[in-house]
Image (cartoon, rainbow, N blue to C red):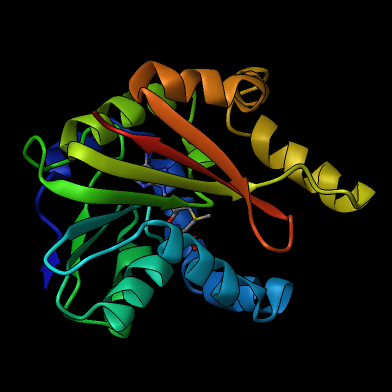
Length: 219
Ligand SMILES: C[S@@+](CC[C@H](N)C(=O)[O-])C[C@H]1O[C@@H](n2cnc3c(N)ncnc32)[C@H](O)[C@@H]1O
């Protein structure tokens, strides 16, 4: 099911070239990820989903779902859950929909989601949060808090600072391209920022140590 029209209005003011960039990137995104991480990404997704402690009947959102890898995996492992994947790139969502038609694919912005208050038990955001620009990160955190039920959990997965010099260089380019200074500042203070929105925040490292998982719980 594809709900592409849900919040076109919210998207019109956003930088169109960023969405265009992701639309173009969607054609080879999965290929790049596979070539770069071999099967490590698959194990990482399993680790992320395991930490969500999903149970029957839950409603789950994969924020900035891209080509839907987390949403698709959740639906594969827990067919009875209602799974939603939200992204602002139509190209990414088309790819996602070609993988599974029984996930609700929603076109929308992380900073203004087309959902009612307190409707999700779990919100995932995998390797995408750092790509929200400037204040969008704060707006998105406010939105995640709003759409989560009480006791719901936000699982934010991002890269740790890479040890390899060249990869570390690319990592900082990615962060800086999302707003000079602001992106780096967020990375340094992210746990404190998360605590402004969620009273219980924990931080874990992935089994390979290359990604971190930050879990915020709404009370
Ligand atoms: C690096 S991809 C990550 C995709 C996926 N979560 C994964 O783990 O493979 C980042 C995604 O975030 C989406 N995105 C970036 N800014 C967004 C925003 N403000 N609202 C919604 N989606 C956004 C992009 O379209 C892209 O699909």
